[in-house]
Structure formats: C-alpha cells, structure tokens
Length: 309
Image (cartoon, rainbow, N blue to C red):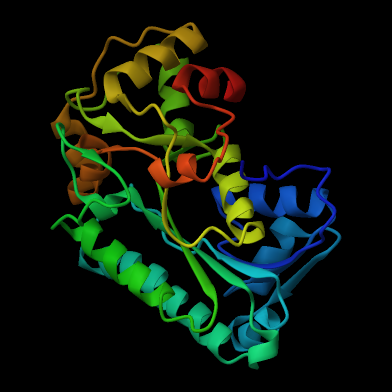
C-alpha cells in the first residue's frame, strides 16, 4: 500500500514550487509548511508571491535564481500555467502555451544545471486531461493516445518540456477539473447557483473528470515522497460524472434549483473558442494512482461538494 502523506511523516522535505500562488499552489504550500517541510517558491514576481504566501519555511526566488534554488531540493513541483477557461484569441493561446511549455523548460534547465550530487530527486510536473482530446463515449487511462485538438497539442509539448530534466525521476500529473470553493470551475458556478440560476453548461452530457483539491495536493506530495512513482498519472477521482449530474448534485448540496441550462451560444459569446473547456469533456480514470495504492479521500462528487460547501 502506498504511503499516504500525513502529519505522522517524519522525513522533512525541501520542495521547490512553481505556480505557488495559484488555486492548487496555495494549498500545496500551506500543507507542506504545516507539516514542517520547507518550500522554495520559484516565481516571476517575488514581491507579489511574497504578499500572498509569506509564512515560515518559505523562501522566494526570481527567474535568475531558479537554478540555485532547486539545487539540493528533495523535489520540484511544477504548477505554472495561465487559466484556460477564458476567452481565447491568438495572443492568449500563445500565452497559454508559453506559460506552460516555457516555464517547464526553465525548470528542466534549472535542474540540469545542478551538480549531479545536488540534483533534485524528482520533478512532479502538472499536465492536464486535455491531453486525451474530447469524447462523450470513450474512457481514457494513462495508456490512451493523445487527441488532435489545441489543448492536446499544448499538453504534449508541456510534457515533453518536463521530460528534458536529466538524471531525475519525472512524474507527469494529468489533472482533471479541480474542485475548490475559492476558484476554478466550482468557484465560478457557485455564485450562479446562489442566485437560483444554476444549471448544466451546454448539453449536460459532457463528461467531467474532476478531483478535490486536497486529493490533488496529496497525490503530488506522494509523488515526491514515493520513489516508485514515475511517468504519467491521471489526477482524477475514480468516479467521473456528466455535467448534468455535477450540477444536480451541486443544486442539492446548496439547496438551489439546477434545472436551467446555460446554452452553448451563451458560453461561446462569453468565452469564444475557450468555451470548449466546459462544453466538451472526457471520461478519465486514475488507473495508475489506484494501482499504486493511492487512497482518494473524496471518491464521489457528492462527498467532495459537501466537504467544500
């Protein structure tokens, strides 16, 4: 059985983190430091990051200091990336790719610049289930091939950049829709439900491969701690749901109606091409994480939403 990250763990880690001020990064840093571990925040804006994350055992490093910062670390967790559920244009699409591929390349270069005896043992690098493309009928595991759309292309290049890290264990975390009250998909849906106007986005038939933020954070820490983790892991709960079920469950938990669908054209007006993130989906299972013995605390969306709301 794989070890579960817990307060009882005695080994103290030093972990370098990119994307530390984001929805997942803030919880990751909080959990690491709460358990006595040290964090080196790799950031493009030290002042902004320090204002959000100032805490004991947290240090901050600008881009010209990344190579120095990662040397001697237990591991590196790479979470950098611009939000994708926004209106896309040519400039924003270029930034989506640059913020993922470019930053990941910088992380790999920093690791490769370390003397061999000071190289981090592991790079845990975020990717996304967008790697698989979209489908209403297929079920995807880590062994499935990549899709042919724009997000699949971004994910392929993103993962290739991480694999450039030499002489270190590389773990690629293909993340689903992260559920957290403070932001992401749930953060955008809650205000709509709270004014009694919630409902499925689009047809409601699209698959939502989701994960509670705490399970994602624990999986990433486990990937640092456990040397058997290597290669690709889907960070999705074992029970994906269709959008209609997610909205019905959210309505039940909040005590609000969930029958009024948001039509495709409204989302396309708001997000343009970026609407594909919520209008299309994929059914993705965490086969390798389960085989490794990882225990999801939140297996069903009703459990996750009750915890968060």
